[in-house]
Image 1 (cartoon, helix red, strand yellow):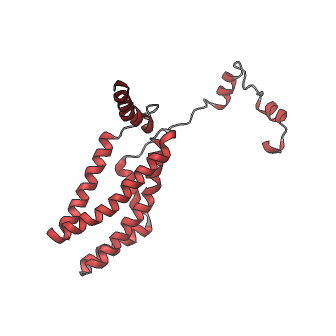
Image 2 (image 1 turned 135 degrees about the vertical axis):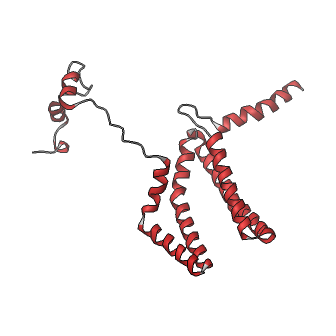
Image 3 (image 1 turned 30 degrees about the vertical axis):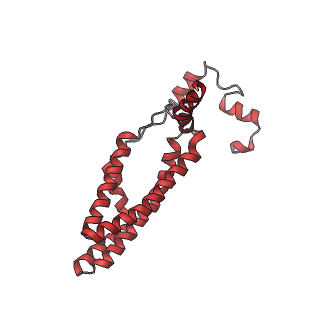
Length: 194
């Protein structure tokens, strides 16, 4: 039997009982009866907790977590922190493409490059100022306090994103256009009145 790529266009149309203009409306009920509705069945959605827990099923993560626990138990706290830093770095590397996709997905196409630039600017500033802030807090109050503050800031930022950064379908905002209208239109109106 030949594969579809070996047929001519007309042979494909004949075999699929269609034409270049598509299916005839009177043929559709018979085809639906024979093949079923042209609908994808939606899979059961995982809960957010299930998605989170599924991240810990990777054998390398399990080995690293066990190694960190053993290091803490035997008193090698530095080794445990290094292992946990490796896991944190791995997680950051895994989530970064998702960040970029989310920024691009929730930004007007005309603003994607600018939005990604702003995202990367603030992310990189977070690395720099986060290190300075952590160092100052660690020197003043101890390493546990600095880790607690950074953890609380991370939770706070995730709550801000969750509650404030909603983007719905067909509700994209052209950021550059909005800024121009918000600030520059007001300024030009002032100049016209002078």
